[in-house]
Length: 160
Image (cartoon, rainbow, N blue to C red; front, side):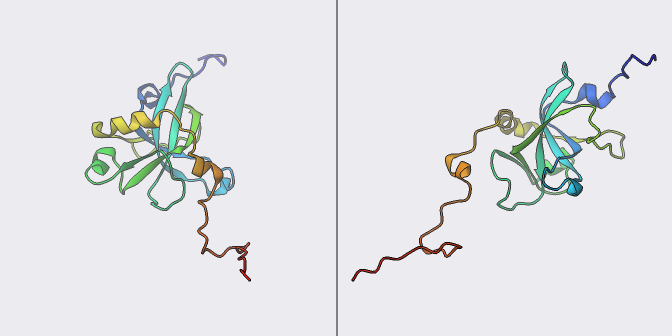
């Protein structure tokens, strides 16, 4: 191979498709040192440009990172090669080159760790297009109730 030639893509890069689950160091803009390999769902692949769109996977079921989710639980875990219930969060997505060093190869020599079962493909189709945040989500936190105390307590009128 001459210096001007690019190496051929790895086998996994040629065969990667929407619905695959890959091991990927998802970027944390606020804490790059906290990055670790995690399962991410491939929602779109453009082989011509050599890029894929991945969404964040987590086993935490907290209220954080909510929106446009696909849950893998129960018998689907084994089919997807996941070891615990996982939610893939469509509002956290990244477009990445298939030759990115953020892909982490596992014991089999590939970052592809599994594939979504066919029963979840309708949900996968909904994740392909990012949705605008709801009006409530766009405003930030939910509206406080009148009885909630906060840094700016509500002023009460006295009726004299």
